[in-house]
Image (cartoon, rainbow, N blue to C red; front, side):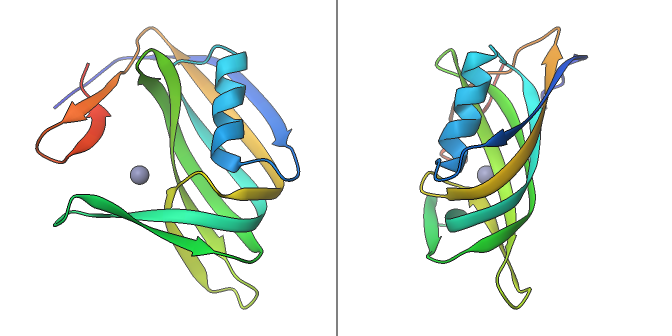
Length: 142
Ligand code: ZN
């Protein structure tokens, strides 16, 4: 178990660019604002999406590409450090034209149509991702 006590930092509210890669642009905001620890939430719409499911048996991500527009019902994620750079770990719930939901781990290749985000930075501690042998994932270690 890992526990860190943190304090609220600053809040950033904004809109991502049409055509941007959703994950990469969130990371860009974190780099520009020097956010090392925080949480992110967003809503809007994507032109297409790429979401992952981690297969615990094979210890590999399986990615789904949704090659058409979807609503972003919810994006929730956190910001921490990996190799001293901010990394965004986010999960996405999307809806298609009939309101059916899809969801998973946000991956590069998800293209913004319109996206409004809120990033809350935290202070007083950092969290760093490192390789975890048991899960074969990059998890918070210190
Ligand atoms: Zn994930």
